[in-house]
Length: 416
Ligand SMILES: Cc1cc2nc3c(=O)[nH]c(=O)nc-3n(C[C@H](O)[C@H](O)[C@H](O)COP(=O)(O)OP(=O)(O)OC[C@H]3O[C@@H](n4cnc5c(N)ncnc54)[C@H](O)[C@@H]3O)c2cc1C
Image (cartoon, rainbow, N blue to C red; front, side):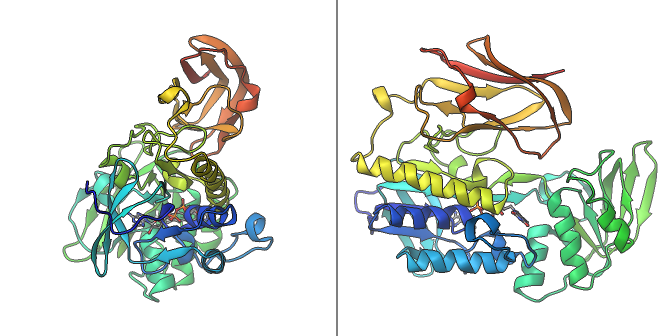
């Protein structure tokens, strides 16, 4: 983009959430001298910063923390490690070779780092992307916005919201709403069971909040502010519900707009950048970690993923200036999956290397039971019977796969 960057750190980490902060700490521990975290928000900490609830940090910090305490601890650890955390620094563009365009309170900045770790996390699908009919009144939120308003700004944006969805985060939304004195009118779920693990369905029942299955949001009503919704059940019956807010929860998508607008290869299945087992993107100056890779994992998982990515980046830095893939090419084992599997990470494998990620991470788009099969160029090399539900962790240990030499493509299927 330019031949005169303003600054040239060893590593820039984009995003100061659990993955980015953990990576920055580990990079410092491994000797990287100049590690900068760029965080667009007013404070680092990522999503946990707005979570007043427990449990966070048991494995990372040896004790149960609230999200807020966890975020403070991660930030303080990074600061004590000598990481340069710059808040209100939003990265707006990525260019080949680790060059970034950054919006800062003091104006635009160009930074060229030897390596860049992208750790921008996930976000919930907002109303605009859910194709719900009706007006565009105020009073429509996601869990993230609700938590930020309630826990960071001490606001109560509505009193009687409808909660759409039953993922784990939907019950977090219910918890946050109740904690702020709201009385949710109902939770709705399009499927015939909750998406979160049982027995979470008893939580709304205990609070006297009806939970409607096989029900979808048909329309939102209200001129300036929400004053009701119409929901539709599986038989097509419509029902009006009075409420003064709608909380769209879950349906996570990676926060990959930066990668999407850049030269990096993007995986349409996961929604995140294509990576190899070392978290390395299609441009070897860039790595990725945390929930940007796939919706959605816990803070603890992302923290560990950030730490692991830092190890691989440090090794890469030690090897000299941007080291191309072995043989000078992007690795030629492509990993893909077929429905009902909805994503597999990583999407590329460098042959004969066992020192990166230890698993293929998978998710299903609908409940499925059957033979989980890995084929190498069409030949079955691994099989196991599996039952899987949407949004649940599903993985295959890479050590279990005997990948033939010169293999070009691994395909993962789940067939009943
Ligand atoms: C609403 C919500 C509630 C959740 N609740 C829980 C929970 O209770 N427990 C749990 O374990 N997990 C929860 N999660 C999952 C959450 O994604 C993980 O806990 C964890 O925060 C992921 O860490 P991360 O570092 O990948 O991303 P994040 O924590 O999302 O951090 C990413 C950071 O990148 C910054 N960023 C994004 N784009 C840019 C840019 N262009 N320039 C600079 N900075 C940028 C963001 O501001 C953010 O601070 C929740 C997720 C959401 C969305």
